[in-house]
Length: 341
Image (cartoon, rainbow, N blue to C red):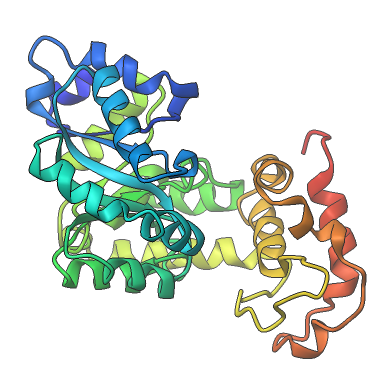
């Protein structure tokens, strides 16, 4: 599948230390034999959650180069930066100096970061180094105001960074929409994944789109979309369709939380906006399974809705006048359930 994609023009391969249980880099080492390595930009990421001291940066980089069977990765990214890891790992251990040294000695072609946090933090990181070559952000037509969002995309591009888009299909959710969305797209003769991908490629600030593909059919479909895409290729009719689809998704949003954060901090440690985000997404995309996974596996236990004590302090601060104390037990009941949705 990977060689088929490269043979037809794909020239950017993204991996990381922990992908596929740590097997992704060794697989790519085999795939990129026979001259394929020279035909792509190979990108992997530093596992910053494992870094305890400055020398760990080089330890993992050297290990990854050996696993990938290459002398250089074209780009080496700090993996999943947020406010905590930016200040507590990258800046604390002086890892930007380590990255600069790796560029100078040839092990790395350029450095960048992938990102999961808010716009303010994104801008701080972008402005935090002159060495950045690129930034990787979550972006799709439903995430224009989430994390870095459209403003972050434009900001990074204005600073001369290449912008790599991950989650263009929102973990596959936009490729497999609920029936109401499918009906809209079917009436227009449009593929859900094609529309979502082409919407991103239509924007001049986007350098690369990363789309996870697990079947040859998906590879061929994405190649077809890429072949018909480009800056300014979506007409006004198609852009209006995207807005219509987006509006229809949002009609299914059960809690009118805007993630403004006025309710925070919770005196009991509950991450109120994040709980509502996962709960809303489960209903918006008809995918409670993924929402439950996020709640039970990725959210810290102390931040979950179950920790709510119904004190009501947050409700006095909420501009949307959401009955947060009443909803938190329901959010926990729905998202903690292991039954099939």
